[in-house]
Length: 427
Ligand code: F0G
Image 1 (cartoon, rainbow, N blue to C red):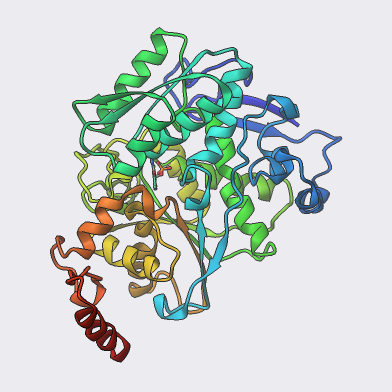
Image 2: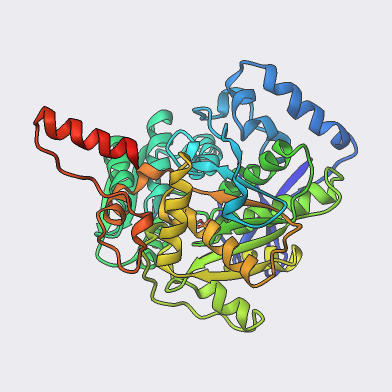
């Protein structure tokens, strides 16, 4: 297989093993994979299956098990935990009136989000290129993953986060794993701008999803899910959209799987944004004629992004899969989250945008009763304990009482406790 970095705007090519984030024309880059004569693609599914029986970390990893479509590193070059061994859950029919509903839970990764799948390849590259320091701008999860993988590789990490707008679980991870944490007075979009300037001036490797290498790891979310479905292609894959890295990676994974003859049809992507952080939705609504950044605000801080860097590539994914883009309110997100949580599965607010969006698309008749639907849960419930406790303490407006599980105070008195237990037994 041959790999080059290729500009999606002007088509210019660059070597893949020289660090670069954008084309000289300013366009976004893709890792273009070309099949060579010796490549044995029809047997890839069997090779991937066989590796499940191996105890080697790179075969255990749900990223590197699919390494033919990720990157041909030597075993000792890879920094892995190993990540990507995430489950696909069948969800109950009452949640969505469709043929079958599944949740792919990327919150089950080592640092609690899908970012680990991108960071394992990103940090391996940083090491290969001889960098001593890595960086990113983040709404929280990228910084947590970057901090952990940098610590594992013995690299320094510096992360830029929007002050006061990052969930506590994520902030505590970056601090605990030892990343230098810079709280920028501004939002994610300001942090993203600042970090690109820093990486252009200094020898620090930038690991936002602008970096096309990282997305090669995130493609495995799609590959792994299709494998878990025994390669029965679902009708829909529904995911939250922020900086649009996953949207880009999933479209690319599907194009490659189809081109290389591993699948013969593709699911439609449905990208869900929060109502006040919805630039991709607005562009979709105007037929992608125009893209305008917005000032973002939402309870789902992970996707509080007004100017997604991957816009052009994400648009390509929607067009390729005949996908759709939808928006949901914070209230819809939090109610969908409480339903996912009540199954004992749980997720952070941004993840629940996918269930909220799937419901809305079903109501509109875009998702049909006979469809099979996969929703992506991107982050673990414990990432944002504040959002969950505020919800159950009744601090959010417009939430039905039946969804709230308010804690109750009780005196330390055996009789009062006994009465309470009797009352609960009768509920
Ligand atoms: N869900 C979660 C939990 C996230 O952390 C993110 C992005 C997204 C969804 C959106 O994914 O950017 O690929 O469209 N978080 C980034 C971060 C921006 O810095 O952690 P996307």
